[in-house]
Length: 202
Picture (cartoon, rainbow, N blue to C red):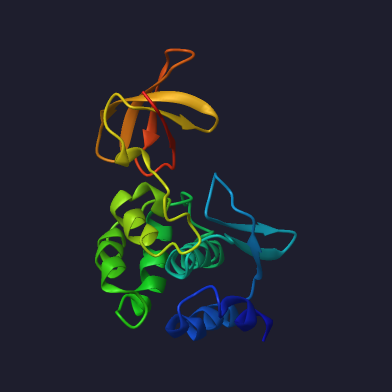
């Protein structure tokens, strides 16, 4: 089956059969896409067809969670569309938890990810990128990232840095984000602590 061939290098080995079974239960078109800053994956229903996409540059554990996240959206559309649902409301959270439950074990996820992932699934957020602890756990297994990548959380307060081709200064660290001032405009922004940045020598 084509989907098996596509997924076998993208998800943990012990999750492959389960992922394919989800497709067999309710088929959809599946595509691996370029990296998108706005999302890790996407689900849409258009012209009578279900389509799920996942970014190509995720490690196998992040890819798996994103895949299940999007399948949960499909299940809400199929089973709950007669209700008035929010994109990441209670119906989606319930479907996501239900689909993830068989995977929450050490045969699929290493302990370093399983613990924060289990906590995340108690009340899943609209995007796993909003869970700093979980993203740190995923990041430890990112083989395709530069080993020397520097993140905003790694630099000291007062340090200047480049982010998205603009120069900022880190002013204050909060739980998951930092208050930063853009040097050119003097305007303040909040930027995720896990954002990859390039420090500027002071």
